[in-house]
Length: 302
Image (cartoon, rainbow, N blue to C red; front, side, top):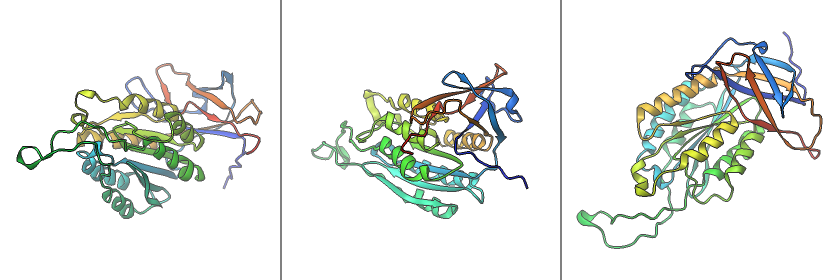
């Protein structure tokens, strides 16, 4: 059996190739691509289609007040997805985020444990600033204060830095959220950098009950697009429709099982810890790649 000797200096990226309609393109070879780092051509040393390489997957589920009407849908469909995607050598974990970030289930291959963790998620929000007598019929009066309790960026950082960074191979996280951070100590840039440093692809399924936001508007999709595009994933807007959520999970499953793996040794040998922009360009101009925007070089202290 041939043994692959992995050089520690090899830069490795997983990516998808799609046509203009978004269809996945299989069966390509390294000769179908041009590779560059910071604009400088690079030589492809390793190339493979990696549908069977073990997958490490994180499910991050938003349990803040804005998700009250969609949480049950996320639990049901998320459990079915894990049952569909996980194979014998794969592992997954579940994190919830609201006013705090909680690891509900550490790495496991057990669908039963993962589904239990998803089903145990509950809406957890801080007390709002509204007070007053109950409205007609005994219900609460309308309240439009926005609770500061969606630690989305902190959740991505912890999943990347504390969990996924210790793993090797194919790594991805799927966020089920409306995309609006409220109260994180860290910023969007920190979340993106932590995901890039852990070599993790980020997908976001925008599960939003638009009625929750009133006339103030909803704006979570903009930041989520930046988070996913820079890490090699994408945003899929499902709203509060269970059929759209099922279809989105099916698309992600297909993409994760249709990845290419490319490896090269950078011509820039400096160990300066800098961010290097990588471009994988198909020679067929009708194709486009879905890949992370780059990587962080090893630093001297590393």
